[in-house]
Image 1 (cartoon, one colour):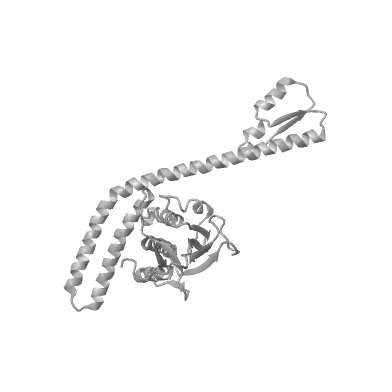
Image 2: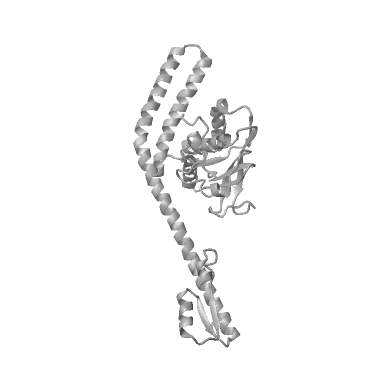
Length: 325
C-alpha cells in the first residue's frame, strides 16, 4: 500500500510472496495492484517464469504509455497549428496592405532620387526587404494549409551570403561573424524563399542571444548518413548538406530545449517574440525531408544543426541570383 501510494514508487512492479493462508490478505494485495502472488514454498523456476512474465507485461504497459504521451503531444501540436493557421489567415491581409505601402513608397523614392546612387541603394534594400517580408508572411500559411510550391536547385552558399548582407547593418559591433564559406556550392532542391527564412531565423536568434561580446559561426558541410560518424537516426540514409549555426550566447536549459520547436513557445516575452520562428524553421526543414536538432549549455551558447537532402547531381540548373529575382 505504501509503495503504490507514493508517486515516486507507484510504478514499481510488486510480486507478493507469502506463506500465509489468509485469503482476504491475498485478495487485498491484488486489489492494491500487485502484479502477481506466489505461495510458499517457492519453486525457483516458477519464480523466474513469473518475474519474466511481469517484466514483459511492464514493458508492454510502458510502451503503451509512451505512445499515449506521443499522441497527446501530437494532438496538442496539431491544435496549436490550427490556432496559428486561423491567426495567420486573419492578419495576412492587413500585413500585405502595410507592406504594399512600404514597397510602393520605396519605388516612388527610387524614381525621385535621380543620380544619388548611395541613397538609392539604401532605398532599394528597403524595397527588397519589404518584398521579402511579403513573401514570408505568405509562408506562414504553409503551417495550416497545403500549397503547391515551385522547387528549384538553390545554393545554400548564396542564400547565407545574402542573409548576412541584409543583417550586417543591424548586427551589434560587439558580435563577430565567422562564415566558413566552402569553395564549392552546396546545392539543395527547395523553394528558395523558405530556405532563406530558415537561415534568417537561426541567425537572428543567435544574435539576440548575445548581449555582450560574442561569436556567431556559420558553416556548411556534406554529411553522408550512411557512413558518417555524425549520422542522424531521425532521417533516411543518404547524402545531406548540414547547416551549422553556432553562437556563444546565454544558452538554454533542458526545460527550454524540450519546448524550443513548439508553436507559440518563446523565451523573448520582454522583446516581443511570438514563438513562431523555430516552429516555422522545423516545419520547413522537415518538409524537404531534412532534420533539425539543437545543442545548448546554459552560459556557454547554442548550436543548431539543419540537415537538407543534397540535390541530385543530374540537375544542373542552379539558382544563384537574389532570392527575389
